[in-house]
Image 1 (cartoon, rainbow, N blue to C red):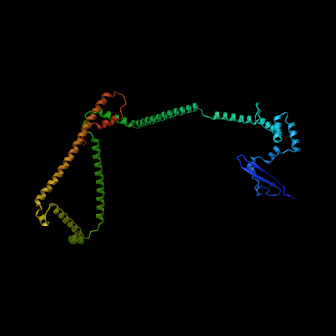
Image 2: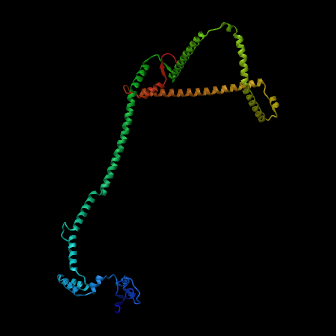
Image 3: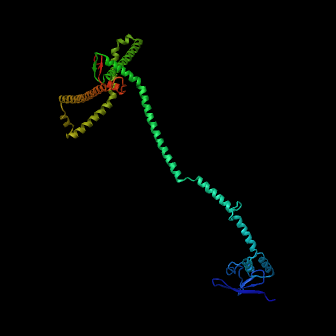
Length: 386
């Protein structure tokens, strides 16, 4: 039986052409003009995406498809265009698909609002979200008002802190005045009694300090005297407890003389290295002095050595110069101290005279006034304790 085949030649949109045949068989049924096998998808680039089902609907025609097309035209409800499109394209069920799409569209949106339509549900959620956003958002005016309130609160806080600092300072001042008030009152009372006394003499400034120093010296001497008395009593007790041998006392001079010789010998032996080191040091000093003076040897240095009388005179002049410099320094210090005391005395007298002329009777006195009066010359009974 001759082999059954069907063939054709097709052209693509870009001008490519393909001649092929389909033979009867189970596999590799598609071949080209030279009977070479082609893959099953070799025709796909030339079909433009047209499937078998669409091709059969559009180009295939049989009795069943004619019956289905007539039924589609009857169900189109007078939609001639839809009927012709379905008949021409071979697409079946267009009317049912259109009805389903319209029903689905009606469930999504219709001009009349309904709660079951998804568009109005989404619209409701959108409006609620916008309302929540408007309620939660911070407007520019509210932001400015909050900033103004914060700035005002910060200014009030600074004022409160400054007020607390002022109150604390005033409280500390009042507390100091409260603590020193009894002392000031006592000082004023004593000053008033001193001013009311007659027959008082003027004393120089600083006499109380000198009196305190003298009292400290007296107390130190008393303590030293008491300590010396205690040591004396202890020595007397130790002396009384010693048992004296008369035979040893008779030979005391011999024993002491023997110890004196041993002591001199031991001391000389121990001092010999030290004396030798000092002598070596003096020799080095003399050598350096000789070189600095420019003498040739040690004999020349001995020849230039000054006499004992000249050395005595030079040492006396050096001591006199040092004593004179110390005296000048002491006198300069005493002169500066006297000038300072004189200046303080004049200033204290001026303040005292000014205070008496300005302070009215019965007015509380300045707490510094007693201190100034203590610095000024006082009148005391008797003579200068210094």
